[in-house]
Image 1 (cartoon, rainbow, N blue to C red):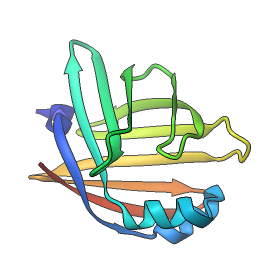
Image 2 (cartoon, rainbow, N blue to C red):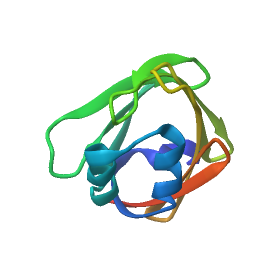
Image 3 (tube, helix red, strand yellow):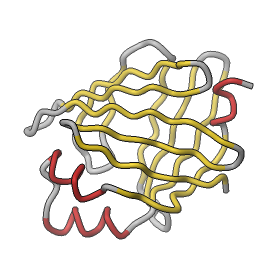
Image 4 (cartoon, rainbow, N blue to C red):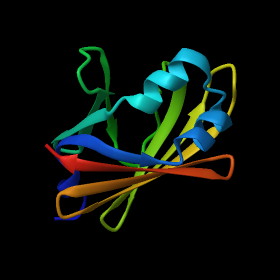
Length: 138
């Protein structure tokens, strides 16, 4: 099954370490409070070798959808609107992501995603601090 187990819809259930990562990317004020108290929603689809990832905030209509090929860089934006240059690869059945900020605050964000049964674990690391988000299949 490999990385096909990511296909489908996922809803955030829990996040740990948010404040440390928010500090690392310079997120403050209303945006910080909003993202801390909201739940992200992800949908993975695939057509041949082209993957699409729709991400947004549960209960809101605005979201971001980007399409990509594994192993090829692409431009997108973070959920807060920061432009990113991104690359997604696989390591066995895990997705390994690297996102380079092109915004005013420069940073590198690494995300490792893995699925275990109906739960997806996403560990995000920025400037040596990490956050883990747990999603359930919806």
